[in-house]
Length: 200
Image 1 (cartoon, rainbow, N blue to C red):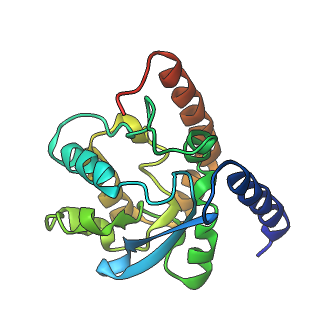
Image 2 (image 1 turned 90 degrees about the horizontal axis):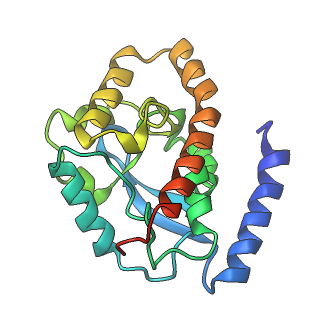
């Protein structure tokens, strides 16, 4: 890949930083649901302590899927499971850098819907499953359209719109909007944490 000379040094620095602040593996691997429901192993830089309780996120996600409110991340106001620097990794999207390997392997694309976790996909309706009609992506229409300010159903609407209107031009527009969207998310995360303590 043309970007390898940049990605590899950045990845090595992130991996070293994780090793320095938290014992355990550098990468976190998790089963995700991809194109037409096919399961694959998705890799991320580990931003939480080893053996973090997954039921916390599972319950939070289940609530967001039922509620008509913005999909604010669990760590928006603080999460004790997150390692030092983990919030920055997550808000900047750098924790997802290893997913470039998933793109190379054909499990993901540069642009597409967010790959959902298995327990989320198990609750999908037929309408929700429409977002699985294309490869999941590193970035996508939802990610550059407000993301944490949208509800779960609004995310589905955006993903279905992408599936129905997928084109090279749309992909290029999304990629061009990705860096500004990430910058806005980092600023929003910082302001959110400065406005009060988390709820855990």
